[in-house]
Length: 427
Ligand code: ASP
Image (cartoon, rainbow, N blue to C red; front, side, top):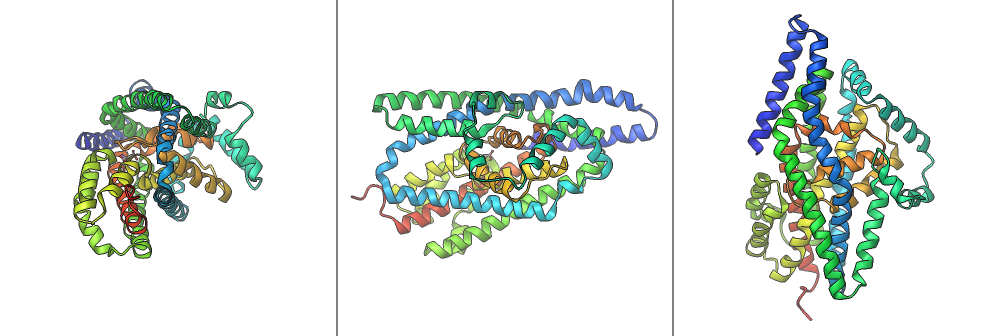
């Protein structure tokens, strides 16, 4: 699959450049290219994006409610659980903040040349104008009241029907349902968990269907982007990709080294040497879940983590702790906003950090799982979800990289928690 997507990416770019060349040399008329884009290239991409969009609401709801309902059993683990969650949250928040700092500094989306930018904006004119106006109106007026209103609007059902799907109220509702489920009788809680698990599995299967289309969709989306916006989008896109890879490396070897030094006795060098197989498995499978068996073995055999701690932290981390994903989600939102010329001020970016961490928890540990959530995040700021098409071509390689971070963060947490808390089965 990786190879096919990569081939799709390269052939899409090549086809786009060739079509552009033919237009410049007069062999193809602009009207022909427009027709080709409207009747072939864009529709294939739209089916792909449309399938992802359909599953956003059920998937976010079911995964979060499921996660919280399952945690009910963990209440009694006290310190171990609270340290684990604190480290998960810290790791995801630090990753996102680093990503946003870099995107603000590099401004890759702002580097798109004027002609490409105006056709990009023109392609979503109404949506972009609405987002710009909405965010500018909110700018500087942020307070606790407005944050509460984002989570608890007058009517959360209509917020879901908004063309820019508002996921915050849905997140709040899912968390409340999950919490309420923990107070049900054991058999009712189990039924609730089974139902949520079923919905999450269905949503995940639909993401799989979309991903089966990915090699073709990526080729069409890239060709369409180059035909419509010119080769001027490629440079900024590469800057974005290398920027994200760079900041991922910084988070992996920088932040995680600091965490290990501050809170554990395991030397970072030994840690990174020990988890080489885990990193390779994560990179080649793009799936935290598929990497879990390797992580469990390495945590015990190479890092000396006790079996009960590894058995508690790592499966939980594979589903909840998505440090690389959080970093990536924040970067994509900012990049797409920059590309459309939509400004997010400091308070709005702070909300983005919070939302990113919450939504990363809802991402499952399988390839491409964060894509529906990114659509939700874009919608939350009113940014047209079509902007995601810009980065989709490179998503797979960035998925491989962010999965490495996701599992490394789980192992860092396991090492630290193991050294600082009694293991879950001790009295
Ligand atoms: N592929 C990632 C994982 O399994 C999730 C994602 O960001 O899509 O950890």
